[in-house]
Length: 202
Ligand code: HEM
Image (cartoon, rainbow, N blue to C red; front, side, top):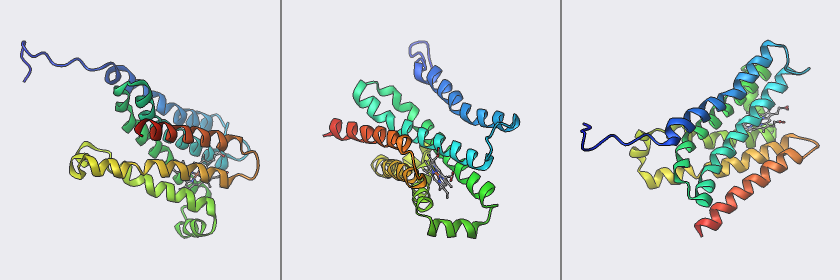
């Protein structure tokens, strides 16, 4: 109970403004995709466009989630950590939509076909491995799961986000046949984020 002597702590700037703003902004790419769909603006190959668009945003959100700790370590702005879970969950949401777009729009929900692709096409294998690593992180993102697992075990499990990021970038490199600039940029960003963690924690 809050008394006059012990006023309720003011909600921080991050919780009050930044979190809702980041939440809203994170939905913008999805909203833009829907608008593009309704305005017939999905390129000559809509299925490929949707899969790639969602894949791009999945990777961007994954890198944003992975950037939170390095930003905290470099700037000392501890409150930024409050954005990590939300960004991670958005990354997972875009990955799930990317996977669903591929499974549904490209494969017609043929799960046997999907499994054959996972076995045969190396970039799909690697993408799936990244997805399998991210799934337990999303499943254990609640406060209850943190308590259940205990902080140390939870943190250890959530380090999987880094190899998942590495696999996601490899997935991108493997799926393209020419023009490696885009995945190279993501690779450099990921390497920089990892380097900050290693250097600052050393
Ligand atoms: C963490 C997981 C994943 C991430 C971050 C991710 C990200 C990406 C990115 C960035 C691209 C390239 C987009 C572009 O060209 O602009 C891509 C392409 C693609 N991804 Fe993923 N992906 C993931 C998992 C998966 C999974 C699990 C599957 C399917 C089982 C998959 C299927 C595909 C396909 C089919 C393409 C290429 C489509 C085409 O040929 O144009 N991805 N992905």
